[in-house]
Length: 236
Image 1 (cartoon, rainbow, N blue to C red):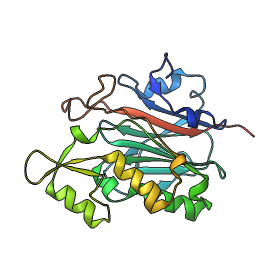
Image 2: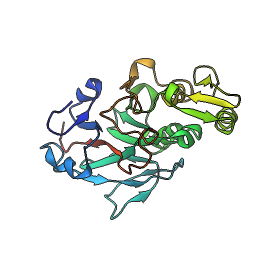
Image 3: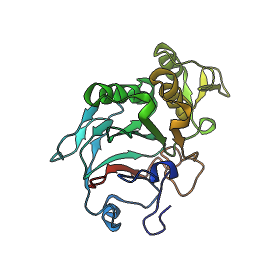
Image 4: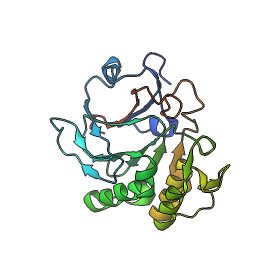
């Protein structure tokens, strides 16, 4: 964690010299992106997140927010941003082609297999392969804090997810606990084919961790966690 700007990072991604990333803590705002020497030169790219499975390839900085829940770029100098407050922020990094993706994984997007949509677009656009791709999962609400109804359970099963390992039985009939992290791990490993050694995670629950923001804990608070990833402007 960087003490002065309050975001977390994964050491496995920090080792990539051309990459910058972070998972913001509570109080880390968009304007704080300009407070760090490595971030000041980047142009933030934000989404109007709609809990969809829409993923866009960004080749030039857009003039305004784009309507999507996933962004992909191979262009240095842009900072792809995902805002969360219980949903899962997820990054994909093609280490060979130098391509990145930022994905917003709420229950609708996860159930709609948005991370698979993002990877398939990377594969078609940049010839990305599973074995050269790293995945980073940020803080999100954990299963025991995230109860959902029968309609969510049924939706996931219709989309091909196994119930085992992704859902736990709730305290009442027709209620279940959903593990967003496990669902996305299943997509990454089983549907996409990433090796287990290529998947990294910050195992923090937004609901249980006071340094993070949770919509279920603070439903009246509009603030969101700022998560970001970008490609540095370096030659090697």
